[in-house]
Image (cartoon, one colour):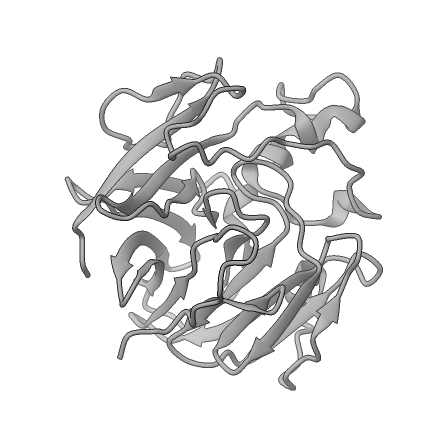
Length: 298
């Protein structure tokens, strides 16, 4: 890994917390001011959640706000999507490049300012584990290196998710999922229309071999093609419902389009004991930026 990178923590105003294991003092930023991520904070614009939103998989911050059992519930369900509680992340990037990526306390990864994020879920012999809503998840920075390690406890041991930024011919974020258990598992990487910053917007998703295209541009590329993939829209419901019910098909799905901006996708890979999956994630460029292939290094 190329670790010539810098990291920062950014904490929403009033939330003086950072992910477990975070070193140093968090930077507390007014949400109306430029953020520590080079002015990348995307202002949250309230909009209706999709139909049957309670059945969707959401980032940790929104999952807490939609759960009536937590103290994070805002005054009325309609306020949940714009309420700032719990939006805590670590920012990763190369010191000589402007691109930044955000990793929340459960491993959800997004390019700063993007309208989508990459989540991860794990299937063991018992069930699917979704780190965004699980209790047995911990996170730390890997020593002095700018690598965020998120660990999910499953039957038989730990599954470890690592995020960092490296240089191919341009800056990309990398994700590695490591099965440190002694049993076979399945890992899903999921495209989500919500990020550590707030709600996102995805209209078009397509799968091309090991790559996922979002809005026609290369966005994520794994080191091998998935065994299963699911794409869906607001009308079809969250792709997570199909994956978490073990109903994902082996046939490559057709591209989907969702004018409401709630397109979702998930791809599934089997991982044997001590096997790893790796993927790279593109930065979020301004409108009109030419797409660059999110090429996985050989």
